Amino acid sequence: MKTILKFSLIPLLLHALTGHAALTVTNIAQGCTAAHTLFLKSDGSLWGMGDNQLGQLGDGTYSGNAPLFGINRPEQIVASGVTAMAAGSYHSLFLKSDGSLWATGYNYYGQLGNGKYGTLATGYGPNRPEQIVASGVTAIAAGFGHSLFVKSNGSLWAMGLNESGQLGDGTFHNTNRPEQIVASGVTAIAAGESHTLFLKSDGSLWAMGEGQLGDGTTHSRTNRPEQIVASGVTAIAGGSGHSLFLKSDGSLWGLGPVLGEFKISNRPEQIVASGVTAIAAGAGHSLFLKSDGSLWGMGDNTAGQLGSGTLGQFINRPEQIVPGGVTAISAGANLVRGGGSGHSLFLKSDGSLWGMGDNDRGQLGDGFTEDYFFNSYVWVGLTSVFIPEQIYPPPQPVLSSALSSQTNLQFNATTGFGGEFQLLGSADPTLPLSQWTPVCTNIITSRHTNNFSATITNAVNSGSRRFYFLQSQ
Image (tube, rainbow, N blue to C red; front, side, top):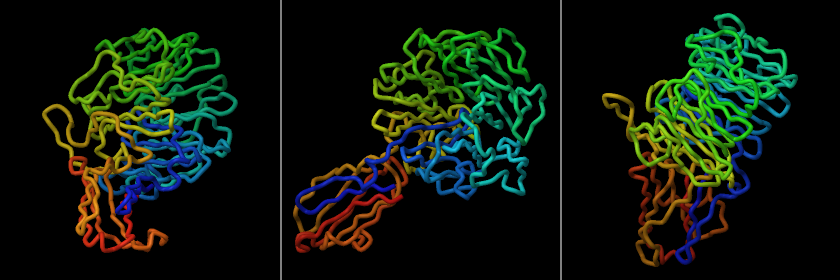
């Protein structure tokens, strides 16, 4: 993925590399306890960025480039044919158009369903996608250590960590092979950190696992599915310790630690009366869309994950983040850093991808590699993005000084992305860029020093010489 700024001495011309306009982002996924991000492009390719220490990005490594164990720019994982994906804490699932289920990453609890339990000696699990089910899968979900999928006959299957009963099989034993939990009628699934939600075709909501499941009791866990709402539910989302669902009238409901009241509820409570079309739940924050395309959020904002421009606060009522044009949302977190480490992504109607919040492992994919620091309460600081920033397509560099015809041309630009930037020059514009002469290279790793500068000597004497400002992948 590259961005080019092309200019001759007169005139100035800005453009993007061919291919950016043709591809858009079509879907996004983050887990409620995940520090990595997955997204699909319109050509069916799967891309990822962020935490990769256990192979969850499926790129063949167990680390990646800086920062820490992450990949801070989007990289392609699968070239085509992907239709859906799910991000667990340290593992990833995706579906292909033939209905096959694939998995990569951490497998200590058997959450990949490949018949194995990962160990230290085997790197915990595969760092390349492995096929788990050959066909017939229609929906997937991933929690901290468990995975779920639905088959075309409406059956629900589960594998992985089960110490809280989140698999719903009547035991508290882990399993490394998919096992059937419900025989038919399941239409949607969601995985929280240690609990599971699913919908049936009659609009009923069911739950199992640990936490406040909304069944009106105070028991901490159940290992069998329990009905929470009898009918009318259309969408579900599971967070680290809370759950959200929508009803057919567009109302938004919450249970567990209700992020709008600063209290814990063992019964579903209405948060918004109408007009909600989509929901997402992170570790401690929640997002939702309204029918006018506006994005709203509430809950933990200590890493800027609500995009309000501030840090270090909790918001206990829904606040508008973006006034319109949003089509999809996703909320994530990072259990390695604990509280205050959430991030959020959203898509706009033009297919652009935007993000905000924690970025210590590159999960926003903006190319910056900054340190973070710890105060007496939570991780905060330099890695966070407090307001939404565009991730894809990469924002064009912005000239911060005017170009003019002079012997020594001073060139300055401000970049919206981190990475390696080159200024290339050639007296023959017909040559391919690979044959142009590098004039200057800047490696930008901090959003606080995101300026590119170069001095071009004897620019006027070069006649028709032209220059390209190139951001490399």
